[in-house]
Length: 450
Ligand code: NDP
Ligand code: 2IT
Image (cartoon, rainbow, N blue to C red; front, side, top):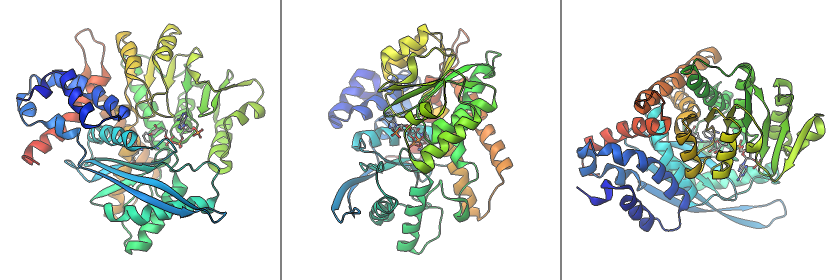
């Protein structure tokens, strides 16, 4: 038996020395290993087969030059990536992120987490992630199109409907997926479900835009139900104002909750009267069509405040849904939220809470839904889009709404069972890690030493 598997710190020393400087990747691996290593003590067969070590080494890390021409005729160079983490239970699957902060560490953390998340959905999808350090902000439509086409001109050789199926993430929505799908089809002459999050006209799913945010709200609802409680009448903090945040806010409104905040990378808005459906429609138009900043909300709606350079976690509320980016809830934020009486946190973003913050939430025994469970509705709906494309059919909005709801209820149930403690409090963090790990581990064991 390897010493590396038997205690967390020794295991992490190995991960850190093999992946120098990749701090986000170390963080994501530590979060999972902290639950899996103690659990493995009862399953020596996984330890002997070094399954966790193998999962923490991506199958493949692809990086490439993306060269494009801006509107002024200048040649620009970015770096593109695709991390194919693990395809033990299905083709690699996971989003593409375009953001100036993108680097190998961030994409490796996302691809690693995706492997566990996709396993939790119960659908046959492995884990991957990709992206580029390209900043879509302030770029013209034509510049975004040229970038996406150039990105796909390299990426196409590494993906395929049965190989690796990318989707959206930060900075990649329907517009970018359209440009990339068009370029894939142009190069290969294949009309296949090689990307998800597509437009409805060319094989997209009616519920994919809503799925991540709605799913995170459904998970929150399921956790509250275990306490005989509900979202109705609760004050909710939401960060971000993109795809996940706005649809999370929409579902909170549907359930009778009051959304107090939204944010972007420049600051947050606080509307004590609640960001109702009408105001939310305005935000969606602001973000998706005009591509403006959330600060404009406070100019448009009287009574709303804009807090430049700050995050929303100091506002008193009952529930919180971080839906912007990684490490947006710091240790002090978690302490403030707890002292303000937060009851539940459902992570729409990937790894939004730092490890110390998670420890505070878990020690306080609040309802804490980790990203890989709470935001799995997005990739789950992507899995259904893949099925639709393979079968050359489409399901209706009503059918997909029910499937999404059932998917999240099922994920909640599995995590709840795996994470239930003797005192009746559920550690969803441990539950999701263990439930996600087992299926991938069993498949890897079946393949022998690979
Ligand atoms: P969008 O690009 O639609 O929105 C991202 C939002 O987060 C924007 O409001 C953006 O503000 C803000 N944001 C981005 N980076 C930062 C930063 N460094 N600091 C503060 N705010 C930031 O992305 P999504 O809504 O799709 O993604 C949000 C999160 O959800 C990510 O963590 C993503 O990985 C995760 N996720 C997304 C899924 C999906 O289906 N789209 C599925 C599962 C998880 P600004 O405009 O100023 O950049
Ligand atoms: O983090 C995620 O789960 C996503 N960005 C969605 C991935 C997908 O393939 O739909």
